[in-house]
Image (cartoon, rainbow over all chains, first blue to last red; front, side, top):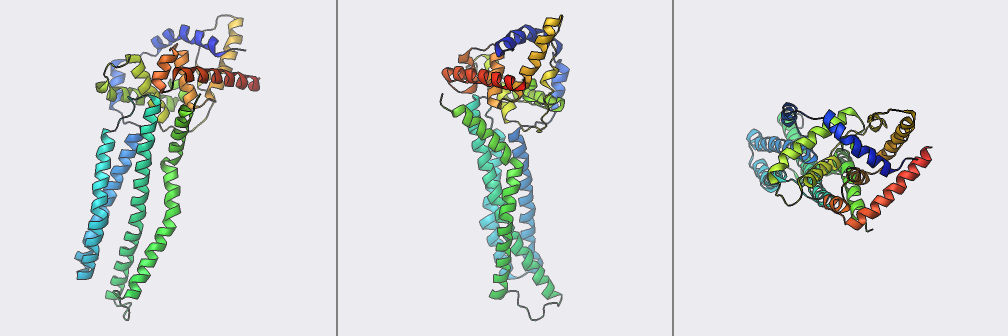
Length: 212
Length: 141
């Protein structure tokens, strides 16, 4: 039965030959460098950029609601949503994006690099999860509100008061129900997105951290 | 390295490209604190371990490594070798990195520097890997 040490001998005697066969020309390297990276941090950064764009679109939509409905109450509500939720989150996202752009852990040894990478990924997944979860009730609430308001304006709900506390509670309950439903869905989606890869990285780190 | 970590040609090419890209990106930060080869192995192994690859497990890629066979005796060795390569595919990513550095004839101190574990633990790990490979080979027979 062949042993690893036998392979080592064959490996070293064949490696020179192998390198000769597979030498990469300068032009090929230049082409390779022009290609897009498949690195996990670059992928996370692209996702974060998509999130930022999505947040900006939502922010614009929220900002358009008071312009469209032209009531003081709606204006105050939208202003609160923008100032309390959107602006802080957007600043945080942009900060995180810049941080990821500068992040490079591959210079470190494998163990340290994995620790840094896991830390970054966990942070990002947590931001992504809570950010998306926070957007669900806000968009649900605003969407319901605009639909009901528009229906009343069109004369469908004549005896219906959109600003009554009962209606607002109903819309709020609907938004919360939507959030409850989206919680497991988001958990599943995030796990599908990077969760399994994160588990793999954690397993590698665990293996390196084992005490001999 | 690409051969050890990838199970198909597409992944092999992707990983090779990614390693070149990361080496290029990291080169300005190389501070001569370690040997250039140690630094290169660090970048390459970190890229290989942390990369997102398609999980298509086919146990053929390593078998494709061709060695020149000149007589019948070497033919048997080649069969054994292919079985050993198959067994290596069943190792974890960390174990594969240690095997690779061992095959590249790196001393335990340098393997320790690249992986971030102690030289003693590298030795322990290496013994465990050899034992694991022996068991895998016995099971395959």
